[in-house]
Figure (cartoon, rainbow, N blue to C red):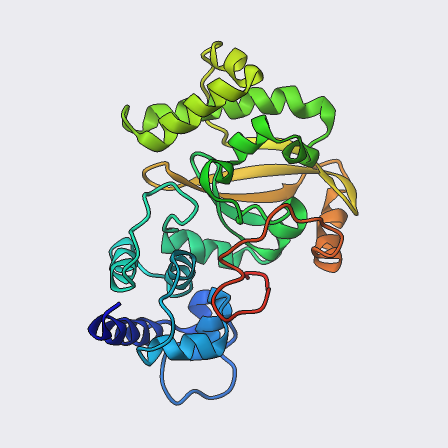
Length: 301
């Protein structure tokens, strides 16, 4: 990065930080503020970085931020898609393609996610790549945001890694497989016919998973909108939930939130998630967004 880009990066971060109120990102207003906007330490907290590292960025110094850090800063500062792309270019990092693990999350969805404080919720892509989770979702589903490459898609892991299926009772595996395949066909059809990401995912699964190939040949198509799921938590056992979906305008992102299924004891179990947290959950991967430059491991809020 050139000195000019470092300087512009710092100035841009300061300008975006100054326009956001703590309430906009789910933070308390706290003590009296001398200037509007977020404090530097608050941006660092939201992005999962150390305060020293973020201070260096605003001063136009420090090491070149990684792609994961740029994605985390864009989410923390509620940047628009154009602003996010500009930030990548200032940092001399390639702008990620839409739909991948570093996809830009629409600020409106982030705002809604931040307001869902009492229920597990997360934002995923139409190819089931988890972009961001609230703490309750991490406690319920484990950290799903740390995967890269083809493994970033939960559909890919479902058909290639037995560990992924531990989230569901074995009796539900067949129905879940059918639902994932039908949803993937619907998502791929909504995209451009030459979309490389969806095409690559489908070709890979056809090559490596006989189960997927068999189900794909059935030509079932159906978006997953409102599901009743049975989830297995390592500490709390079976939890039955309703999984609700809010689709973005282009259909490429979904806000999922989980509510207790009527007629079950799941309401009490979901409340216990706040107590149990993630201490009993074995995490399959480390998210580079939550362990970034100069930071100690922590959870995104």
